[in-house]
Length: 87
Image 1 (tube, helix red, strand yellow):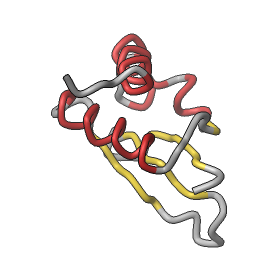
Image 2 (tube, rainbow, N blue to C red):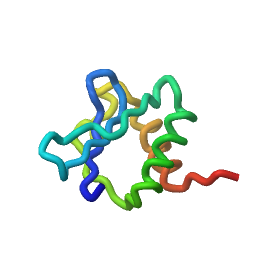
Image 3 (cartoon, one colour):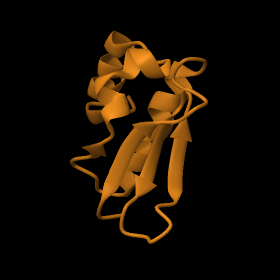
């Protein structure tokens, strides 16, 4: 994956789409509101396995409160995902 695009969908889930495909297929969807730990593990694994070091983000990320995800929780989630380690 070369061009990952992070957004929040109508189900209040984080999604990652691949902008390198014509269909912009959703390649990952996580629900941090109901399964924070499982979503964190899944997202962090996805980031590492695809060697992602940056994401293009939808405006829904900037205004996540309006899309059903608390901004503080989202920031914490993304920070944790980048620093995630299995001990």
